[in-house]
Length: 116
Image (cartoon, rainbow, N blue to C red; front, side):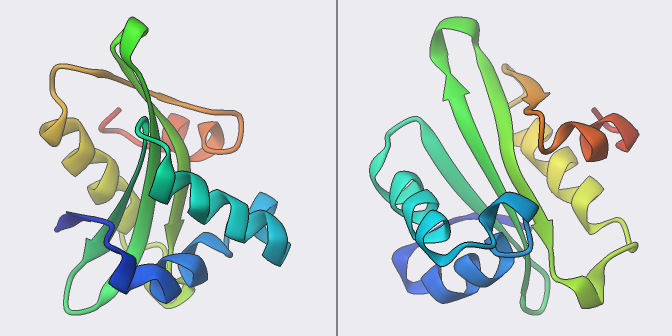
């Protein structure tokens, strides 16, 4: 289930976000988290099954009616089980009125995703 990020999940979210290649540096990771917490058009979602095992970060482009997937990450012990695809599908269902697009970092995954 896709849930909205809350500050109480900060450590879990940072751990998942750190799996993204461009978020390895702690200062960059902290800056990214701050953007998700303070910028109105940045939204972070967490994927919860029994535990939180995935993260999906989007950037709203209101003028173009698009959601750009900035970050997508799954706990390594839950990879190759379709979690990422389920997160994208849930996002599509939640925002059926918006066009979902990848950025350069998420494009390789989103292009393989059969629900996009």
